[in-house]
Length: 477
Ligand SMILES: Nc1ncnc2c1ncn2[C@@H]1O[C@H](COP(=O)(O)OP(=O)(O)OP(=O)(O)O)[C@@H](O)[C@H]1O
Ligand SMILES: [Mg+2]
Image (tube, helix red, strand yellow):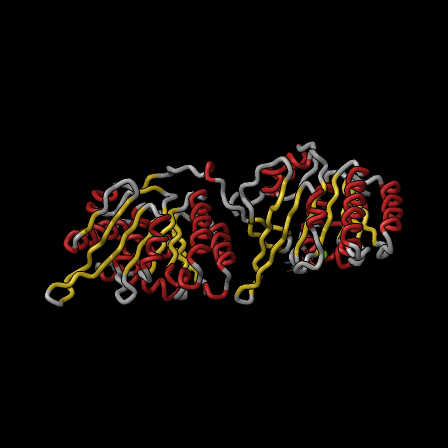
C-alpha cells in the first residue's frame, strides 16, 4: 500500500534502531518512542481477530534483532503455531535455533502464587528481554472475587513487567464483557484492540490503538489484513502534511474547458455525474480524452460491467465523434486497463483496500477512473462512505494519481458528499427545447473558480476539438 514496506530497506532501518521494535513499519515510524519505556503491551480482541499473529510479529521482529523472547502459552500447540507463522513469513524455527525464541507451554495455574513460581523460574532460566503471555485468560479467572483479583492481577503483571529488563506482551481474548480488562488496561503502557467484522460474508479487520503512553495518538482505528508471506499489513490513513497539493500539470483537451477550468493537476479528484436515466457519452469521452491527450495510463474500475463491455463502450463513445478503426483500438489498448469489481462482494473497507491494491499492482497508473460510484454509495451509510472515501482519495493523491469518479446522480445528499471532496465537478444534463432533445450541457466547477454552465453548443465544439486532436494522435503515429 502507500509506502509498502520495501523489505530490504525496512530491514536495514530496523537494524539501525537501538530500541525494541513492533516489527510493523507504520507502528515503528509513529510510536517507537514508547518502546524505550520497555512497555507492558496489552493485545485484546475476539477469537480469530489476529492477536497471536500480532504478538508473534512483535516477538519475531525482536528475536531477529537478537532480543531473547520467551513465548508462554497455556494451550497453543507449538507445531501449529510455527506452521501458521511460517505461512505468514515468520520463520520461528530459525530464531529458535539461534536461541532468541523460546516457546514454553505451561499448565493452567491453580493460584497466583503457583503461577508466580513457574514464571519467575522461567525468567531466571532464560533471562528474556521480551515475555509474551498468549493468552492471559486462564490467569484472569484464577479467583472469583473481583476486588481480590484486581489487586492480584495488577501486582502480578506489574511485578512481572518490572522484573523483566524488556517488554511484556499480554494477549487477552475478550468475548463480550466476560472478562474485565480494565484492570490490565490501567497498568498497560500500550493497549491494542483488534476488531473484526463480518460484512457480506467477508472479514474486515482493524487495529484500534486505545492507548500509547507518552504519545499523542491521532489515528484511532487502522484497517489491516493478514496476508500469506507478509503477515499483518496495515492500511493507515495518510498524514495530511505528507500530501503535497500540487503535482504535474495536465492540459485540458478543448478550449472551453481550458477557459472554465484552466488546468488540472495529477492528484486531483474529478467527480462526473449524469442522470441515471440519461447516461451521456460525454461523461466518458471527456475524462478519456484528458488521459489520452496527456499520454496517461488509465486504470478503469467498473462496478457494473465486465472489462470487455467497458472497452466496447469506450470504443462506441469514441465512435460517436467519428473516431473508429484499428488505430483507435490500439490507442485504447495502449493506455487503458479495465478491471471489474462486484462491490456487493466486499465490505466498504475491503472494497477500498482491494482497489488500492489494484492500483499498486499495476505499473505506472496515472489515472484511476471508477464507475459507477453511485452504486457503492447506495450500499453504504453516508458517514462511513464519506470517511472511507476521504482516506482512499488521499492515498491516491499521495500516489500522484488523478482520480475520476463517474456515477449517476442518485440523490442530492450523495452528490453533495462527492462534490465536497472533489477538486472539479462536471455535471452533465440533457437539454430539451419544445420537448425535443437538442444536446447536452455541463455544469462545471473547479475549486478556486466560479461555477459555469457549458452550453450544448460549446460542448459540441469541445467534442469536435477532442476528435480532431485524437484523430491526429491516432493517425500520425
Ligand atoms: N496464511 C494466512 N493467510 C491469511 N490469513 C491467515 C493466514 N493464517 C492465519 N490467517 C488469519 O489469521 C486469523 C487468526 O489469527 P490469530 O490466530 O492471530 O487470531 P487470534 O485472535 O489469536 O485467535 P484465537 O482467539 O483463536 O487465539 C485467522 O482467522 C485467519 O483468517
Ligand atoms: Mg491466538
